Amino acid sequence: MTELLRRVIAEIEKLPDERQDAIATRLLAELQDEQEKIQVTGQFTPPRDEDPIKLTDVIPREQINLSPILIREIPWHNKKLHLKTPLLLTPKMDDDTEELYVVEEPEIGLHVFSYTREDLIDEINEQLAMLWEEYAVTTDELATDALTLQAKLLATIEEVENAASQK
Image 1 (cartoon, helix red, strand yellow):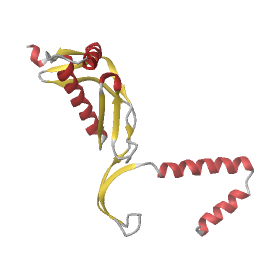
Image 2: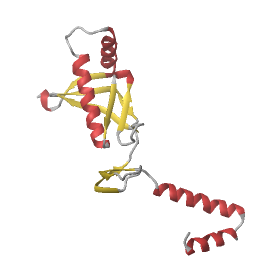
Image 3: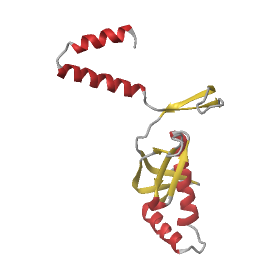
């Protein structure tokens, strides 16, 4: 412990319990803010033991943002796929590595993951377009589960013309 921190604690100890708790609460909140997770990539040089010894070629990624993603429409060929009710998706970090953003919406067969939030949104759009093409508008014969998915997609999404292609 540093000398400065010892002096601060000595001063705090002189305060009434309520003030001590208030200061402790603020300090803990400050420490938690400093420990916010961020994504980084790089090369780990493992030692002969368990812990990494060196991290090189570090590429800072971004502060992890798990706020909900709202999808209203996505581009598809020369049209748009419009969600009849906007899709609100809440990303989480994968359980194994906590490196990948993950979004799941089992009702419409959506399972997407990516290293960045921006790429995650692109992947969501691409997977929705793929699901639409492979299940909703296919003329192929579909299995029972695929027919159920098709019905859910048709109830959730509709094709609309782009303004430019309507001319």
